[in-house]
Length: 145
Image (tube, rainbow, N blue to C red; front, side, top):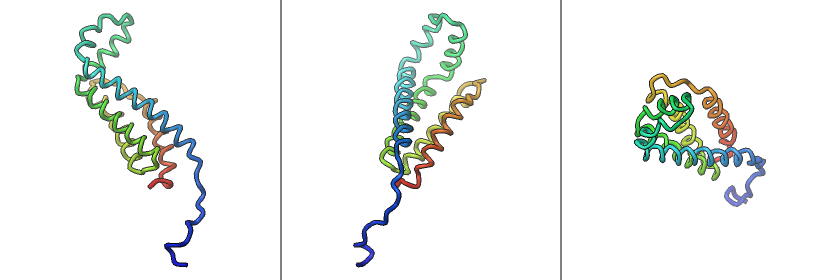
């Protein structure tokens, strides 16, 4: 029997439940991120004009700081969340490219507010969450094409 006709060797099939759970959470988070940042980008002027309607002063200041980044900031975030979402779809299909798309877009999403918003505080929880997801996905790379 030559090499082409031999049956594949028995490789252990990994339990992909964790991968699927990570992907579902990414679908939800990136989908909502793309949608919300896209809406805010489209209606940026409306949000700026109606800041006074926010009753809590701390929330109003935070939203004003975010809106100060400009409309392009929100569109870039929406695009990056779409890239992250497409990466998760590829990860679901066990494609290594998905890991790279997901990880790169998430890294840029962490940096973007720091570049666009003067005085924006570093969000350590977002950094931690991004690392957890990236490491979780990384654990499945050896089973991907």
